Image (cartoon, rainbow, N blue to C red; front, side):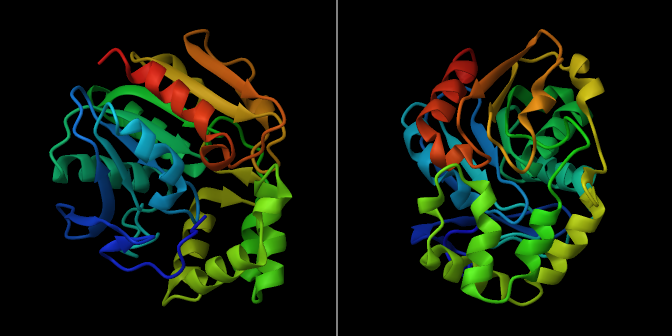
Length: 278
Protein backbone atom coordinates (compact mmCIF):
# COMPACT_ATOMS: atom_id res chain seq x y z
CA UNK A 1 0.00 0.00 0.00
CA UNK A 2 1.01 3.60 -0.51
CA UNK A 3 2.48 5.03 2.66
CA UNK A 4 3.53 8.40 1.28
CA UNK A 5 0.33 10.26 0.51
CA UNK A 6 -0.25 11.78 -2.91
CA UNK A 7 2.78 10.94 -5.05
CA UNK A 8 4.84 13.48 -6.94
CA UNK A 9 6.40 12.19 -10.16
CA UNK A 10 9.91 13.01 -8.96
CA UNK A 11 9.74 12.15 -5.27
CA UNK A 12 8.70 9.31 -3.00
CA UNK A 13 8.62 9.87 0.72
CA UNK A 14 11.06 12.74 0.29
CA UNK A 15 13.56 10.57 -1.61
CA UNK A 16 14.47 11.62 -5.12
CA UNK A 17 13.22 9.28 -7.81
CA UNK A 18 13.49 9.13 -11.59
CA UNK A 19 11.21 8.55 -14.54
CA UNK A 20 11.90 5.98 -17.24
CA UNK A 21 9.94 6.27 -20.49
CA UNK A 22 8.83 2.98 -22.01
CA UNK A 23 9.00 2.41 -25.75
CA UNK A 24 5.26 3.14 -25.96
CA UNK A 25 5.73 6.50 -24.24
CA UNK A 26 4.43 5.63 -20.76
CA UNK A 27 6.45 7.10 -17.87
CA UNK A 28 7.42 4.74 -15.04
CA UNK A 29 8.61 6.14 -11.72
CA UNK A 30 11.48 4.31 -10.06
CA UNK A 31 14.19 4.64 -7.44
CA UNK A 32 17.68 3.29 -7.99
CA UNK A 33 20.07 2.73 -5.10
CA UNK A 34 23.54 1.23 -4.77
CA UNK A 35 26.27 0.54 -7.26
CA UNK A 36 27.25 -3.06 -6.60
CA UNK A 37 28.35 -5.51 -9.27
CA UNK A 38 26.41 -8.39 -10.75
CA UNK A 39 22.83 -8.44 -11.94
CA UNK A 40 20.74 -5.80 -10.17
CA UNK A 41 17.74 -6.52 -7.97
CA UNK A 42 14.40 -5.22 -9.28
CA UNK A 43 11.52 -5.04 -6.80
CA UNK A 44 7.83 -4.98 -7.79
CA UNK A 45 5.03 -4.06 -5.37
CA UNK A 46 1.49 -5.46 -5.16
CA UNK A 47 -1.99 -4.18 -5.92
CA UNK A 48 -2.49 -0.54 -4.87
CA UNK A 49 1.12 -0.38 -3.66
CA UNK A 50 4.07 1.66 -4.80
CA UNK A 51 7.86 1.57 -4.66
CA UNK A 52 7.88 2.60 -0.97
CA UNK A 53 6.57 -0.88 -0.17
CA UNK A 54 10.28 -1.78 -0.32
CA UNK A 55 11.62 1.08 1.82
CA UNK A 56 12.93 -1.31 4.49
CA UNK A 57 14.46 -3.59 1.87
CA UNK A 58 16.00 -1.40 -0.80
CA UNK A 59 18.32 0.52 1.48
CA UNK A 60 20.06 -2.44 3.17
CA UNK A 61 20.18 -4.54 0.00
CA UNK A 62 21.80 -1.67 -1.91
CA UNK A 63 24.90 -1.91 0.29
CA UNK A 64 26.15 -4.75 -1.92
CA UNK A 65 24.18 -4.53 -5.14
CA UNK A 66 22.29 -2.08 -7.33
CA UNK A 67 18.60 -2.20 -6.40
CA UNK A 68 15.65 -0.78 -8.32
CA UNK A 69 12.10 -0.31 -7.04
CA UNK A 70 9.41 0.89 -9.41
CA UNK A 71 5.76 1.89 -9.54
CA UNK A 72 3.77 -0.37 -11.85
CA UNK A 73 1.46 1.30 -14.39
CA UNK A 74 -1.63 2.59 -12.63
CA UNK A 75 0.24 3.14 -9.37
CA UNK A 76 2.20 5.86 -7.58
CA UNK A 77 3.97 8.25 -9.92
CA UNK A 78 3.77 6.04 -13.02
CA UNK A 79 1.42 6.34 -15.97
CA UNK A 80 -2.23 5.56 -15.28
CA UNK A 81 -2.33 3.81 -18.67
CA UNK A 82 -2.49 0.07 -17.89
CA UNK A 83 -1.62 -0.89 -21.45
CA UNK A 84 -2.77 -4.43 -22.24
CA UNK A 85 -3.83 -4.75 -18.61
CA UNK A 86 -3.95 -7.65 -16.19
CA UNK A 87 -0.92 -9.61 -15.06
CA UNK A 88 0.36 -10.15 -18.65
CA UNK A 89 0.15 -6.43 -19.41
CA UNK A 90 1.97 -5.48 -16.20
CA UNK A 91 4.65 -8.09 -16.96
CA UNK A 92 5.12 -6.56 -20.42
CA UNK A 93 5.53 -3.16 -18.78
CA UNK A 94 8.12 -4.57 -16.37
CA UNK A 95 10.13 -6.03 -19.24
CA UNK A 96 9.85 -2.74 -21.11
CA UNK A 97 11.12 -0.96 -18.00
CA UNK A 98 14.19 -3.23 -17.93
CA UNK A 99 14.82 -2.27 -21.54
CA UNK A 100 14.33 1.44 -20.82
CA UNK A 101 16.91 1.54 -18.01
CA UNK A 102 19.36 -0.82 -19.73
CA UNK A 103 19.00 -3.91 -17.54
CA UNK A 104 19.67 -7.18 -19.32
CA UNK A 105 19.17 -9.67 -16.49
CA UNK A 106 17.86 -8.98 -12.99
CA UNK A 107 17.07 -10.73 -9.75
CA UNK A 108 13.32 -10.19 -9.81
CA UNK A 109 11.44 -9.75 -6.53
CA UNK A 110 7.66 -9.42 -6.41
CA UNK A 111 5.16 -9.00 -3.58
CA UNK A 112 1.51 -10.10 -3.82
CA UNK A 113 0.22 -9.18 -7.31
CA UNK A 114 3.81 -8.19 -8.08
CA UNK A 115 4.80 -11.81 -7.48
CA UNK A 116 2.53 -12.91 -10.31
CA UNK A 117 3.92 -10.10 -12.46
CA UNK A 118 7.59 -11.06 -12.04
CA UNK A 119 6.75 -14.75 -12.51
CA UNK A 120 4.89 -13.98 -15.74
CA UNK A 121 7.81 -11.83 -16.92
CA UNK A 122 10.32 -14.61 -16.19
CA UNK A 123 8.17 -17.14 -18.06
CA UNK A 124 7.66 -14.82 -21.01
CA UNK A 125 11.33 -13.86 -21.34
CA UNK A 126 13.41 -16.50 -19.53
CA UNK A 127 16.72 -14.81 -20.25
CA UNK A 128 15.79 -11.69 -18.28
CA UNK A 129 15.56 -13.28 -14.82
CA UNK A 130 18.69 -14.18 -12.85
CA UNK A 131 16.53 -15.42 -9.97
CA UNK A 132 12.99 -15.07 -8.64
CA UNK A 133 11.83 -14.19 -5.13
CA UNK A 134 8.06 -14.39 -4.73
CA UNK A 135 6.84 -12.77 -1.50
CA UNK A 136 3.27 -13.71 -0.48
CA UNK A 137 2.72 -13.99 -4.22
CA UNK A 138 -0.26 -13.95 -6.46
CA UNK A 139 -0.48 -16.45 -9.26
CA UNK A 140 0.06 -19.67 -7.28
CA UNK A 141 -3.57 -20.50 -6.55
CA UNK A 142 -7.07 -19.28 -7.30
CA UNK A 143 -8.19 -18.32 -3.80
CA UNK A 144 -7.85 -14.67 -2.73
CA UNK A 145 -9.64 -12.29 -0.37
CA UNK A 146 -10.91 -10.02 -3.12
CA UNK A 147 -13.27 -8.47 -0.59
CA UNK A 148 -10.20 -6.61 0.64
CA UNK A 149 -10.06 -4.77 -2.68
CA UNK A 150 -13.74 -3.86 -2.49
CA UNK A 151 -13.34 -2.58 1.06
CA UNK A 152 -10.22 -0.61 0.16
CA UNK A 153 -11.64 1.08 -2.94
CA UNK A 154 -14.99 1.70 -1.25
CA UNK A 155 -13.60 3.35 1.88
CA UNK A 156 -14.46 7.05 2.08
CA UNK A 157 -13.16 8.01 5.52
CA UNK A 158 -9.92 7.30 7.46
CA UNK A 159 -11.55 4.87 9.89
CA UNK A 160 -13.04 2.74 7.11
CA UNK A 161 -9.73 2.84 5.26
CA UNK A 162 -7.80 1.72 8.36
CA UNK A 163 -10.29 -1.12 8.86
CA UNK A 164 -9.75 -2.19 5.25
CA UNK A 165 -5.97 -2.22 5.72
CA UNK A 166 -5.95 -4.14 9.00
CA UNK A 167 -6.08 -7.68 7.49
CA UNK A 168 -2.83 -6.97 5.66
CA UNK A 169 -0.79 -6.83 8.86
CA UNK A 170 0.04 -9.31 11.59
CA UNK A 171 0.55 -6.43 14.04
CA UNK A 172 -2.61 -4.27 14.12
CA UNK A 173 -0.67 -1.47 15.83
CA UNK A 174 0.88 -0.66 12.46
CA UNK A 175 -2.51 0.34 11.09
CA UNK A 176 -2.85 3.80 12.56
CA UNK A 177 -5.36 6.58 11.84
CA UNK A 178 -2.49 8.50 10.23
CA UNK A 179 -1.91 5.61 7.80
CA UNK A 180 -5.61 5.63 6.96
CA UNK A 181 -5.43 9.36 6.25
CA UNK A 182 -2.39 8.99 3.99
CA UNK A 183 -3.78 6.14 1.92
CA UNK A 184 -7.18 7.81 1.65
CA UNK A 185 -5.53 10.97 0.31
CA UNK A 186 -3.67 8.92 -2.29
CA UNK A 187 -6.86 7.14 -3.37
CA UNK A 188 -8.53 10.49 -3.89
CA UNK A 189 -6.01 11.44 -6.59
CA UNK A 190 -7.34 11.99 -10.11
CA UNK A 191 -8.44 8.70 -11.66
CA UNK A 192 -6.76 6.55 -8.99
CA UNK A 193 -9.80 4.57 -7.81
CA UNK A 194 -11.09 4.11 -11.35
CA UNK A 195 -7.73 2.80 -12.58
CA UNK A 196 -7.34 0.42 -9.65
CA UNK A 197 -10.91 -0.84 -10.08
CA UNK A 198 -10.22 -1.56 -13.74
CA UNK A 199 -7.01 -3.41 -12.85
CA UNK A 200 -8.78 -5.38 -10.12
CA UNK A 201 -11.46 -6.49 -12.58
CA UNK A 202 -8.73 -7.60 -14.99
CA UNK A 203 -6.82 -9.61 -12.38
CA UNK A 204 -9.56 -10.92 -10.07
CA UNK A 205 -13.07 -12.31 -9.99
CA UNK A 206 -15.01 -12.56 -6.72
CA UNK A 207 -12.94 -14.70 -4.35
CA UNK A 208 -10.38 -15.77 -6.90
CA UNK A 209 -7.44 -14.82 -9.10
CA UNK A 210 -8.00 -15.00 -12.83
CA UNK A 211 -4.48 -16.16 -13.75
CA UNK A 212 -2.81 -19.10 -11.98
CA UNK A 213 0.77 -19.89 -13.03
CA UNK A 214 1.80 -22.59 -10.55
CA UNK A 215 1.74 -25.34 -13.20
CA UNK A 216 4.41 -23.43 -15.13
CA UNK A 217 6.90 -23.16 -12.27
CA UNK A 218 8.69 -26.26 -13.57
CA UNK A 219 9.65 -24.26 -16.68
CA UNK A 220 11.91 -21.98 -14.65
CA UNK A 221 15.62 -22.54 -15.22
CA UNK A 222 16.81 -20.07 -12.57
CA UNK A 223 16.83 -20.20 -8.77
CA UNK A 224 13.41 -19.43 -7.33
CA UNK A 225 12.03 -19.07 -3.83
CA UNK A 226 8.72 -18.32 -2.18
CA UNK A 227 8.33 -16.47 1.13
CA UNK A 228 4.95 -16.57 2.85
CA UNK A 229 3.51 -15.63 6.23
CA UNK A 230 1.55 -18.46 7.80
CA UNK A 231 -1.17 -16.02 8.95
CA UNK A 232 -1.63 -14.29 5.60
CA UNK A 233 -5.31 -13.28 5.43
CA UNK A 234 -5.21 -12.07 1.82
CA UNK A 235 -3.52 -14.92 -0.07
CA UNK A 236 -3.44 -18.20 1.88
CA UNK A 237 -0.01 -19.69 2.59
CA UNK A 238 -1.33 -23.16 1.73
CA UNK A 239 -0.83 -22.16 -1.90
CA UNK A 240 2.88 -22.76 -1.26
CA UNK A 241 2.25 -26.48 -0.80
CA UNK A 242 3.16 -28.92 -3.54
CA UNK A 243 5.40 -26.62 -5.54
CA UNK A 244 8.23 -28.17 -7.60
CA UNK A 245 11.17 -29.26 -5.42
CA UNK A 246 13.46 -26.78 -7.15
CA UNK A 247 11.42 -23.88 -5.72
CA UNK A 248 12.53 -23.19 -2.15
CA UNK A 249 9.62 -22.41 0.19
CA UNK A 250 10.14 -20.38 3.37
CA UNK A 251 7.14 -20.07 5.67
CA UNK A 252 7.30 -17.33 8.31
CA UNK A 253 5.29 -18.30 11.40
CA UNK A 254 2.82 -15.72 12.67
CA UNK A 255 3.44 -13.29 9.83
CA UNK A 256 0.76 -11.78 7.61
CA UNK A 257 0.68 -10.42 4.08
CA UNK A 258 3.00 -7.43 4.41
CA UNK A 259 6.28 -9.29 4.75
CA UNK A 260 8.41 -6.57 3.11
CA UNK A 261 7.43 -4.29 6.00
CA UNK A 262 6.85 -6.59 8.99
CA UNK A 263 9.51 -9.20 8.25
CA UNK A 264 11.99 -7.02 6.39
CA UNK A 265 15.13 -8.55 7.91
CA UNK A 266 14.16 -12.10 6.88
CA UNK A 267 13.05 -10.97 3.42
CA UNK A 268 16.37 -9.18 2.95
CA UNK A 269 18.34 -12.20 4.12
CA UNK A 270 16.59 -14.47 1.64
CA UNK A 271 17.03 -12.06 -1.25
CA UNK A 272 20.70 -11.64 -0.44
CA UNK A 273 21.09 -15.41 -0.39
CA UNK A 274 19.46 -16.10 -3.75
CA UNK A 275 21.19 -13.20 -5.50
CA UNK A 276 24.67 -13.98 -4.20
CA UNK A 277 25.52 -16.21 -7.14
CA UNK A 278 25.40 -13.63 -9.92
